[in-house]
Amino acid sequence: MSVIGSGLTVDPATEELCVELGKLAIDAGFRVATGGLAGVMEASSRGARSSQLWNDGDVIGVLPGYQVQDANPYVDVAIPTGLGIARNVVVVAMADVVVAVGGGSGTLSEIAVSWQLDKPIVALSSTAGWAAKLAGELIDDKRSDPVVEARTAAEAVDQALKIVASQD
Image 1 (cartoon, rainbow, N blue to C red):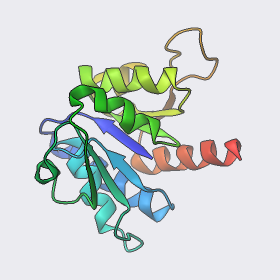
Image 2 (image 1 turned 135 degrees about the vertical axis):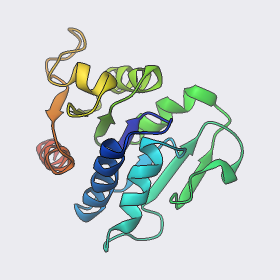
Image 3 (image 1 turned 60 degrees about the vertical axis):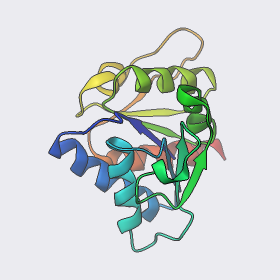
């Protein structure tokens, strides 16, 4: 599962949601991939590491720069790409399911790439930004499945599990 969202600081409610999302994702058997930096990425990585089922290697950070040390402290595997924002393609390409939390233009680009790569998208409508705006919507007519809406971290993980099960 790739978790996408604001790389800036997040409000306490969104941070708590991301921590829960990361933990529940690991509990459900997913690995968590993010852009490896701050904000939503750090909070979901921290949550993933807090799971009793976490194993080293379960938290992946796909970094925009060349420096491994730029990764947030909860990333197990830091992948320095030097790709800048183009690393967004890598973040979503490696996902079975992409979960969007809030977000600005960077998140919007990741949602668009996810859509184009035919990656299922779950958007947390209880957060601000593009996740809330696109939850339940079709991006365009290239696909018939809408962005799946979830209001809680538990619902997002449950939806992700259903999506993965339906792909088998």
